[in-house]
Image 1 (spheres, rainbow, N blue to C red):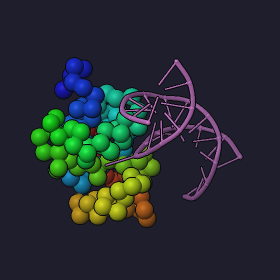
Image 2 (cartoon, rainbow, N blue to C red):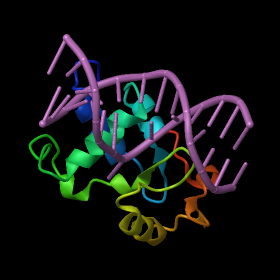
Image 3 (cartoon, helix red, strand yellow):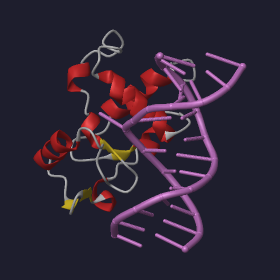
Length: 109
DNA sequence: ATGTTGACACCGG
DNA sequence: TCCGGTGCCAACA
């Protein structure tokens, strides 16, 4: 995955690489994928379900978008319900309405 | 070209 | 800790 790869694709690949039970913030993914800001990551994920990237990602239906959350551990505002269920199902611990980042944050290795 | 709009982040009160 | 304001980047109208 080098510089020639489109940013959108690198972001999707980074998300797809997050192991079950682990999470990354939008900013983390942006940095890991060589992007500029977390906003870009949020934009790509928001489009991942519209068919925009169906031709670029093999199993887009199975993209673990729920493992990406805000820097403070709070969930994506529009999909928070489903996101919480999916994370709980993977054993992710919550502190109230936020994920315990210290315990689940993935560094890409 | 110019303003608006987000699945964001950081800082100060 | 909660809330606003401010900075950001790219897509869109």
